[in-house]
View 1: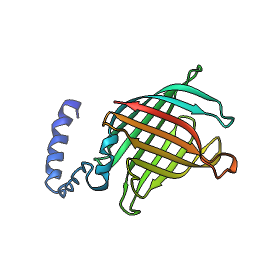
View 2 (view 1 turned 180 degrees about the vertical axis):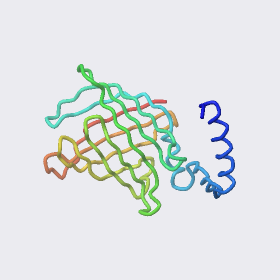
View 3 (view 1 turned 30 degrees about the horizontal axis):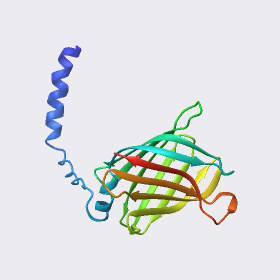
View 4 (view 1 turned 45 degrees about the horizontal axis):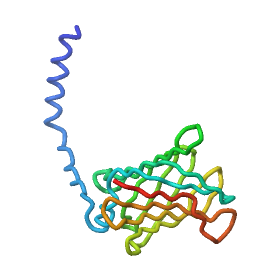
Length: 184
């Protein structure tokens, strides 16, 4: 049978079978960031940041960063993308994650990975005034480390502060590792 004649035969068979198939399930309506997710709305947007990173020895260096937060996964999660370019040559540091309300655990939950093979999993029960302080752990260079990320809303909707802290080397003290001052 020629390819030209096969087309109409397949089309007719598909139409005949379609009448016998059950209807597709109704799609779940997309969430629009209601409930606890509404508290995350001030974070949504593209942010240009000036940052400072600190190493374990206390030395610091400045960098530029870009932070993009947008609703994803049918409005159920806030996709978080961060890139930072340090002044030294080499690839930019990049991370991707999702932030949202875990209805089963009744908490905010952030999970993410980065281009250096690291990961984070952090939670917070609620906002603390203008700040969402997420604590948990992450791994980098094959080592698990307690981490704390803080998103602080600014005095206007055009300002945001992001800080990352770690308890390095078994210390119980939080060490500021990066801090970004961001503008829309």
